[in-house]
Image 1 (tube, helix red, strand yellow):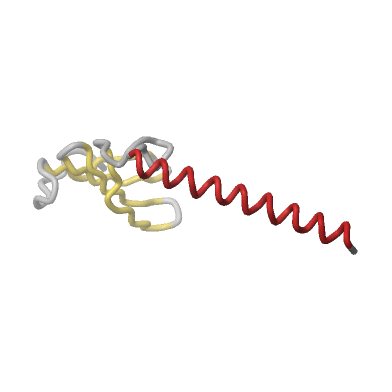
Image 2 (cartoon, rainbow, N blue to C red; image 1 turned 30 degrees about the horizontal axis):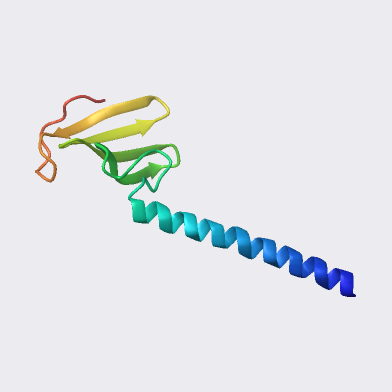
Length: 99
C-alpha cells in the first residue's frame, strides 16, 4: 500500500508542478505583453469578425483586413468575394466579386 501511495503523491506533485509552471508562464507572457496566440498578436491587420454556416459545406465569413471589411462565401467550389465595404463599420456597398 505504501509504494502505491508514494507513486500517487509523486504523480500528483508532478502534475501540480507542470500546472504551476504553465500559470507562471502565462502570467509572465501577459505581463510582458507578448503575443497570446501562436499566430501573432491581436494587433494584426487581419481579423475574422463573424462566421455563419449556411449548410454543412458552405459558410459566410466576414473579415476585416486593415480598415476594409470583406464578406466571403466559402464552399467546396471555392471562395467568392460577395461584398467589400471601404470603411470598417459602414454599410455594405455593392458586390465586388462573386458568384
